[in-house]
Length: 259
Figure 1 (cartoon, rainbow, N blue to C red):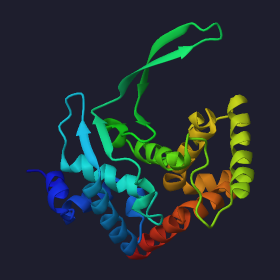
Figure 2 (figure 1 turned 45 degrees about the vertical axis):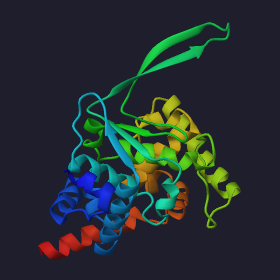
Figure 3 (figure 1 turned 90 degrees about the vertical axis):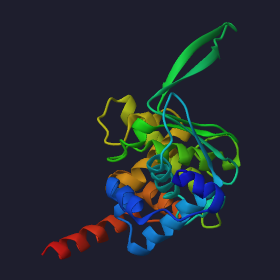
């Protein structure tokens, strides 16, 4: 019986060796202070006890897969709590990118069918789907887990539109003013063919801007803070975390230890 089976039955703790390996594989997790790492581990354990993992495409479910996704997916809710993911249960993991059949009707009413090749997708009220290959590529602003879990946060109050359900520390007016000003500026930059460190896919629509900016907030906080300081402050208030300060402290501690 694998670790995940034990989680479903007895809510076991993640073995320290597996947890250490997970942190080491993801520097943005290793930046967490010791108490935050402990908090994240407990949250990931509770997450694993609640959610149902399954695989497709011949992938064999493993403890490494479950813990990696749980750790990355719980980072955004480290200070928000597991209740933020209360309205869904399933996680489907493919070995690599997967194909989703689509239909779209043109202005003349003709329906066109096509295949969409994806690395991740989140469905309202339904499961979250990710590619294990892409999960392992996390880093430098690309994180399919954080991206799709951010969509789930966005879906808490309906169709994803770039505005998640806000807690008492934020107002809709404050969010709209700051978020959409940054979104419009980013769209302008992409339209003008400007090279951007942040994934240009963020310009697709407000929901994708929120998801991509959430990836960058946790993995490239210095970039978001430099290019969109007001948006960084907004995300810091929403997530109740400050990855830039966290990274600075981690770098300072590493420097002190090395000297």
